[in-house]
Length: 474
Image 1: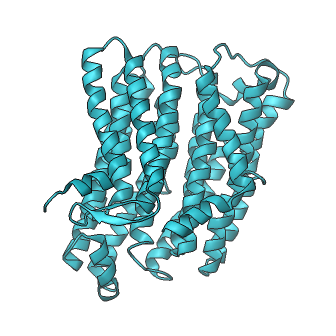
Image 2 (image 1 turned 90 degrees about the horizontal axis):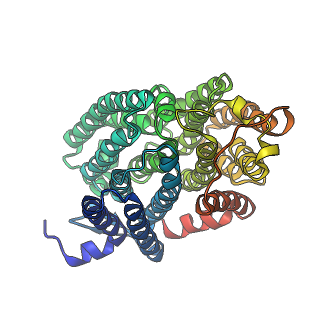
């Protein structure tokens, strides 16, 4: 395979983040005691990459021997990943200073994780998809246990590593079976041969194993066991990054394989995805009610939201793809904002992470309480916030694909979720007490949360913006 300059230039966003990561490694080696410099260099690289990604949304193409896609779909997700990474860098500076554990290595790992995520969204070959998932996952194993002095962080990292390695086996074996059935790992070739091989048992089993591998990455039931423990044990800003950007990357892989390449519409494979979606919505929302730790509550909430988005994947249509893409943007904004406020309230040694610690927050920190209320209403799917339209689009796609039963389960599960989301609002506004919030977020960190809240409202009022972008370019 010949590599041309045009291949590198057409994948500029991913290349910029890669070069930034390498530069940051050099900066960290020469300014080890000044992680703030590393954070600024990381921030600059990510902003430039995001601008390049936005500027090239118009057209799609293949590069690197048709193994990588660029423009359009890849740049849509590339922009989303860069934005999440930018917000994580801004929040992490204050968070790790408060935790007395600010290290420049964090930004190196974050950048390489982002490269892996962008590689996933750009994959036009199952091998590239696997490489992207592994690059992302290996960095995340370290990020989950980044604060090595915390026992829970070490436990979270070990659990994530062991279960992640287990899921990788399913993913790789599925790719091997598909290669055995089709004779190629190129997604365009598989798409062209799909009608011939779709009834091949080897191909169907391979697709099932791919579902298992990807379902682990999105935290879908019954492959969700790692989610609550890892989300609770990892540093809160890492949890925010994992629950939004990493989940978006895994769903980008789901869309690439099970909507844009495979066409099992109405078949057993899509029915299997629908069952995973239903189980995730039911278990995630019911178990979340019993949680007393806000990070664990949001972890089970994340499982439920994975179920909502899997409803769009199960639909297997363009409507399902567009619905999931809109949902991912909305979910990223509202869930990242919620975890950001959790990081503001949290104190050293995992203090202030219980729901009861939010009692009376509106009287001590009225603005933070207001922002948290916005994110809780959005996550519950209350109009006019973006969360409502995210659920509407994926359920509408399921209904059009003759999966009305799945949409009904989704609506009922959303009603259940309103209890534990609104419980946070009740604790902040209608319970007597005094929240113990000592630290105040910096202006830049608070600005990130405000932007998330405003964007959640704007996307709720004008949801057609993302829909039109998705329909026009892909």
